[in-house]
Figure 1 (cartoon, rainbow, N blue to C red):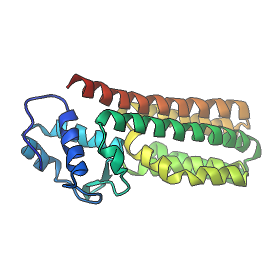
Figure 2: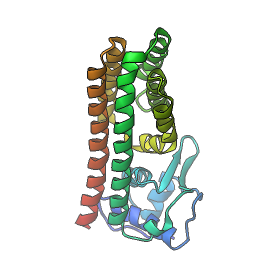
Figure 3: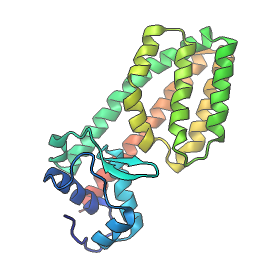
Length: 240
């Protein structure tokens, strides 16, 4: 199913072979991939390059990484996209991310503004407890994205706007899918922690204008990090 990869420092060749195996039906949604060590032996290439390829495929939604279990072909794949070029897959993912974050910006900037006005002491306590969990969570822990999402949900609850909070909750699966693979890059964790702390302080101070501005910056930076990563994949693909 897989062929030896000629000497290279790029993960793109591995990504394309896995993509081709799925397109040809040799790998099906739900199938478990060989371990990184086994893939490195099959491709006769270093494990860091294999790891980079799996990470990128996870970011594109092709591979699902299950902590402690291994890597699997995602079960909700759009096979028509898989059968197209890697470049088209990147373009499709870019549109999905922009659309999702556009929706988050419209919903969550309003929610945090309302939360700063309508929050109760009980809401503040819940936000503070969740924030402390997030700040004390190991940078590499898979719990981080759940704690992050729960913090945002409490903001939605504090806004006391049932319909807007419902819209926020409706995006749950898409938000978590993106957060699992793209938010917690090593250089982004400290910045993310600081932004969540600033959100809490703005809500505590009953400052809707500042709260909205912080959320806008937070989501804009999320978008920039995600799009930059997609552009890096596209650039590597164009080199081959």
